[in-house]
Amino acid sequence: MALRDLRLVDWLTNENVMVRTAALEMLSNGYSTDQRVCEAVFSAWDQFTTQDAFPEFPMITHLEIPKEFMSETLSRAEVMSAGRPLTDRACRCAGKLLEAVSVSSPLIFSDHIEQIAQLKEKSKIFFRIDLDRLRFRVSLLDSLNEDSVADWFTSDIQPMVSFGYYPHLESLYLKGRAEQSLQIAFEQLRSGERKPHVLETGLELASRYRLVGYESVFADGIDDENSSVADGCAIALSRCRNDNVLSLIAERFADYSRSGQLRSIDVLRRSRLPKTSELLRFLRAHAQGSQVQNALRIAEVLQFDFSDLENWLEAILVVDDASLKRIASLLCLVGPLSEGLSDDDKRRMLHLVRSRLQDQAV
Image 1 (cartoon, one colour):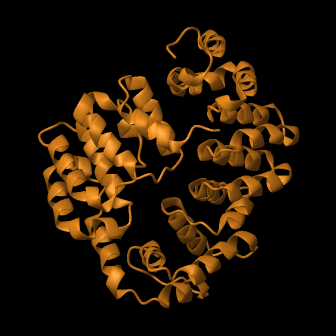
Image 2: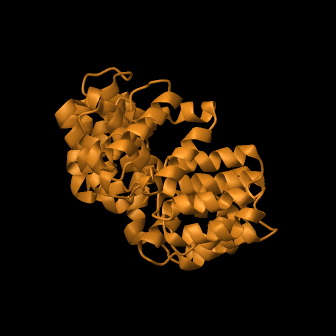
Image 3: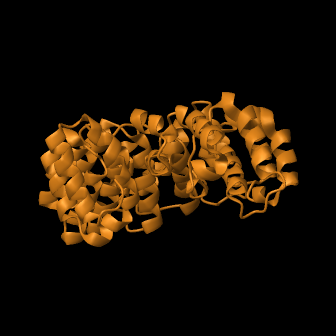
């Protein structure tokens, strides 16, 4: 059983700062939509201070903010930014909070536009916030011409649209009426004739919302010759986080290019679903070269699936040193996870991990 979000959320208030930080990174990298994350982050700030709770938090951009937490979010952002230099950690956290708000659904922030405007005036840390675009996205919730997006996507001439196509497609999606437009957008992935603005708009939506039902299209797109398209499809597929994703990658992996295989492994690494570890081991026979083999092992290590301890130990034993160094900060989770093992297995595992990390704390 791979490490699940529930346990990671609990660790956001762990006494060990390394465990807290690793848990938040895992949740963010996995595009977690668990709304308890926001509440747990706030609790950690209250318990350990904004400066010390998550030293690396300013580098993390994904945070699911529930509507009921909007007022508190903005209040905290105001307090954390007030009178502080832009380099201050608390101030940077405030900036990230408002950035998270700005890329969330307008249904979340629609009642708070003026408060956001007041915040933007008070500190330069909020310079990335485009108030006009936020207001426009909110306005489309009531005023959108619902036939316009599909018409634009099928037009031979790219129309000029204020703030781009994304706000319009987003509004359709939030109303449950985007299927036709999304089908037009994602058909581009399987077509030799593409309209870049159409596909880019669809993938932008898929990078911010969980578009379940389009997994097959995204799985095909992971191996696209255009790297930006392929990367967008990988993010979209990672957001879906369901068993269908595992099945699709299992079916297509052998036919992917090396780049496609590496992207699909990244999707699996982020997903942390119950059968992910088993699939990662199955895919080894189809891996194109040592780099892909190593990526499979890294992904298996980061599932922290101790229900099959021998395979997990083998994976961490054979991962190359450079890769292990890159994930070393996450291996502090081995400590709390090992509490469920027998004394012998715990000693054996901790010894191996410490020896590979040259006695760094785990």
